Amino acid sequence: KISYIDIRNQIISGWPVFLSNLSTIIIGNGAIIVLGFFVSTEKIGDYSIAEKILFAIWSILSLFSQAIYPYACRMAKQSHAHLRRFIWYTCIPFTIFITLLCGILFAFSSEIIFLISGKSNLVSISVLRILSIVPLIVCLNIPAYQTLLAYDMKRSYATVFYIISIVNLAFTFIMVRWNGLMGAAQSMVVVQLVLTISL
Image (tube, rainbow, N blue to C red; front, side, top):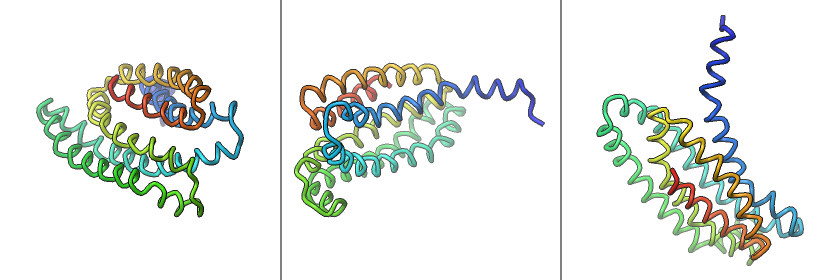
């Protein structure tokens, strides 16, 4: 039987993680929300084709991050040197793989868009080329994110995510007004870069 105090303690300890995950959703979907106020549904569709391809690769990053988390925690308990060595030997090869994937995404964006949508959409191709760098930027924040999690610094990384999610909506609003769909894609690149540096 689980006591009320245990439930409360778990909610309190897990709250920063929950809010940081919520912030990640806002950061990821902020562009679509903002675009809804300024452009037609057809143009949102053009943007979302490229974004869906991006999120397919993003899911690989998420799976990798979740898979190494228990090992990162184990290494952190031994020593910081063990954690650094573990991150070095796991994240460097994975980053090389993601870099190659981003290169393929950029080089073959027109073919990928045609394969997914059945037509050669120049807008979607341009958006995908801009967004092709995002998986690499996100990949670069995995070591910092894993380290913060391993040392139970929930409030530190949660604060970063809260602030970036608010900045994301404001910056995306400005960029979409200035440059439409391309502005939304450029905003995602800048926001992810700032998030990675902040972490």
